[in-house]
Image (cartoon, rainbow, N blue to C red):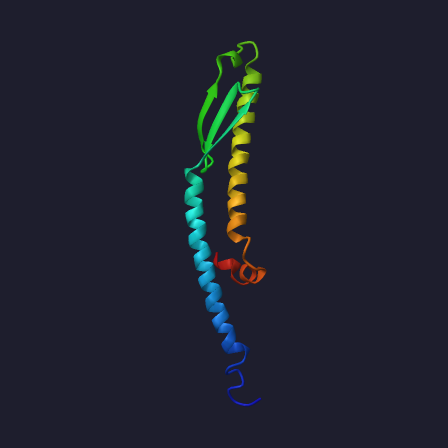
Length: 123
């Protein structure tokens, strides 16, 4: 092979593509941080027992509040109230997860597999 065989070939051209891919990855990382911050500010609410119990969680997946309607409080059936609380909290957390997944999908959906495969470790 002659000296300088890589000059102007795939080696030189590949560097430009890699720099472009790195810039895309950096932009995506910035967008992901912004999205994460926005998601953490959101709140998700769910009810159980026909509205007897309402749970609100933050995008950080922290329980913010639980509201219990007076008619849901039956001293003879505390177990049902506990079940409704668990159901409402879990549903609110599922909503937060679904929102995060949807946002992530929108953010990464336009990228080709090459970027994800080549720079997946950088993200």
